[in-house]
Length: 195
Image 1 (cartoon, rainbow, N blue to C red):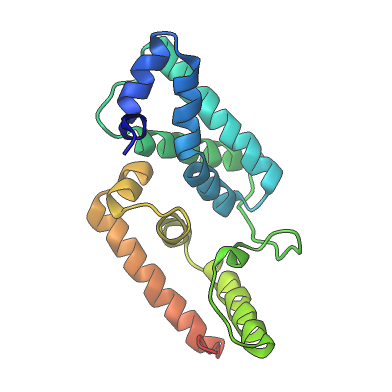
Image 2 (cartoon, one colour):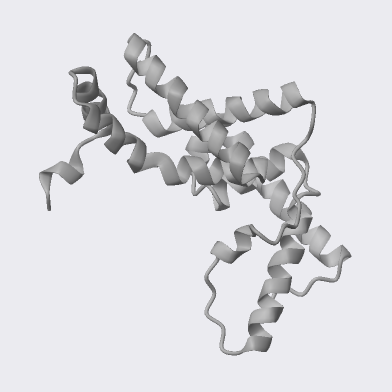
């Protein structure tokens, strides 16, 4: 294994502060997919997600440069909290709630890879994903947020708790209720979840 691949986030930050610009680029590349995927799942708009992603890392860079960042072994959680707060600030300023639009140019369920044997099975699976995606939007905001972070942001419950500033038990409870409510919505809308 290459010794470079085991460099910690803290080591990269230290190298960057010592003048190594490539260390910062490597740090951003290491976490960009996770951060961007989370932002995009919440705001449902590619251009806005790109703007918020850039704003997140501008804030990260400025905080690191100023010496205000305190390492506690939780760099990615800190970055996710910054992105989460910027999203909230954006929606507060624009005084709107995120709404999922079923657009032809983006569908998160296209990212889910399920092997299918026939065109009919693929069409059924696509319809199931579209139906479930619509139902997620009917969940209360806190439940929807935890569900998106967990399943689409690939975050642990510990990370979710830190980003949303709640206890792990609260995050787990919100996920539990999200799944219960999602099951009820599936039953109420007569959606069959297997093809």
